[in-house]
Each structure stands twice: as structure tokens, then as C-alpha cells.
Length: 418
Figure (cartoon, rainbow, N blue to C red):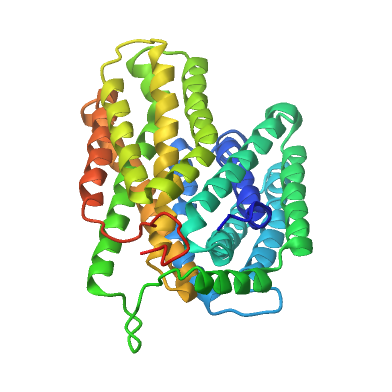
């Protein structure tokens, strides 16, 4: 049994273009709000959280709808098509609104973009597991994450060459819109979703991959599997609480608490990204051989130690680069395997719903943690950042001990999954 890398890469193009969009959105929209429309930071922060709030409700909803959709081009591709076209065209209204100084048009365009992004995000992510046999999904998700990182790099390179502060916002938005449409064209020309999904079903039978047996009348999971799923979702929320707090607040912590320059803080975060990127594929291979749960637990322990030791830095030290390089590796070990573990407990017809469920818990954490950590920063100071992150990441290790399902046994051709 081998992962079809070509199919996985083609199916992952949607996630690559989605990541390119979010990189541009996170960089440009706060600048537009603050510098072009004079929106204060507090209100800007509320606007920037709208995507996470929409995701709580829309990602599981449209994931579940796509599960029940069937067309000539597949279950997921209609959503990818409509969503990509709407987002890539709608996002061009944002720089137009800036050029005409119309805040109403800007907010309207932002609403269109965020709603249609939520429409197709879960179906796009669900496409890979739809065409990938369960034991190979950690490897598949490693490739998907790598493609997402490449999408972010495309935008960062574009921002460097087409600096919106210097030359305006239109060129970079046109570039990323074109990148998204090009990715969609390649997918429409090459992705044979129905055929590939049928092949995956046949492979599942021929390799005797064991599916979760739901109640035939209620379609409910067995109680022990449901319990594992709950603890896994709690774990996902907890490690996002810790990791996202560090990623979103580190620039302020670094400059205010330990006296780093902005350039040093950016370089340290870049090292974390590099650590994750170079680890994605090896982590996928490791998890396929030794198990997803073990790989995640090792990542959680490493991330806990990284954040714990980072607490003791009182000023810049070169070892900070090692800390964050290891943080990137640890996050790759966690992130590559968590979605496949959730989907391992899903019936083949519920992949979109369970993908949305995964995003519901991860997004909820990313809404709560900036607020909770912000309260602690105001009352205690930025010194609380790494103890805060350490606590939540370690708590996820405790909840992962309760997860008894969702792993994948080594592939041997006979009943390979449990």
C-alpha cells in the first residue's frame, strides 16, 4: 500500500490557495482598516475575529452538506469551484473600496469573502481523506500541510515584490486572486473526484481496512468511540489555546518583556515555520510506522518543554532559535496527525461533517485564547505568556491519555486500521 502523491498534491491545491489567501488577509486587512479607514485597534480586532466566529457555525454545516452532495464532478469540487470563484473575485473589491474610500463597500466585500471562504473550506480539506485510504492519511495530511505552507510563501514573496504600502493594494490582490483561479483551473482539469473516491473504496475493501461500526438505525458512534472523539476534540482545543497564544502574542512579548527588536522577533517566528515545514513529510512517515497517537503525544511533550524552558529567557539568547525550531517540529507532529485521528472515527459518508467538527474546536480555541490571555497580560504582564501556553499544552497531554481510538496500525495488508 502506497500513498498516491500525485493525487494528493492535486487534491491539496485548494488548501494551498486557501492558505495563500489567509496570509494576505491577515497581513493586508488590518493595515487597510487602520491606515486607510482610521478604524481603531479594538474594532479592527473584532473585524479580524469574524472569520473564526463564522467558522464555528459554517464549517461543520457546509462540511455536512457536502457529504450529501453528489454531482458529475464530485461531492467537494462544486463547493471548491463556487467558493474559489466567489472569493477570488470578491477579494478584488477590497482594494477597490480602499481606492474609493468606501468603508461600507469594504465591509460588504469582506462579508462576501469570509462567507464564501467558510462555504468551501471544509469540503476542500475533506477532499484528501475522500480519496486516501485511512492508514495513509497522516502522510497525505503532511503533504497537504506542506502545500499550505507553500501557499503562504507565495503570498509572502508577493508582498515582498509588490509592497502594498509602497505601490497600493491592487497588484498583490490581483496576483493572489489569479493564483487562486489558476489553482482552480488545474484542479478542474486534473482532479477526478468520483473516480478517485471509488478507487479508495475498493482499496479499503481489498486491504481489509476496518471501519467504525455505527448503529444502523441512529448512525451513532459506539459509546467508547464517542468518548475518545470527545477527548480528542478537547485536546485539539487545548493545544490550540497554548500554541495560538504564543504565535499571536510573541511579537509583543519579545519587544516588551525581554527587549528584542521587531526583526529578532520575526526571525524567531520564521524559524518556527521552517521547523514545521521541514518536519511535515518525515512526521507523516513516522506516524504511519509508529502510530498517530504516539506521534502527537511526543509532539505535545516536546512543545510543553519548549514553552516551559522559554519562560526562563530574560533577554535575547541564540538558544531561542533552537526553542522555536523545536516548537515548529512539535507542532508539525501534532497538526499532521490530529485531523486524520478525528476522521479515523468517521464513517466514509461523514468526512465533511467531522472535518468541520475539527475546525469548530480549533477555531473556538483561537477565539477564546486571545481574550483570556489578553486579560492575563493586563493583570499580570507579558511574563505570563509561556506559563499560560505550557499549562494548556500539558493539559492536552492529559486529555490525550483518554483517547483510545483514531490511531492506525502499521500497514500489513490484513485489517490494518482500528
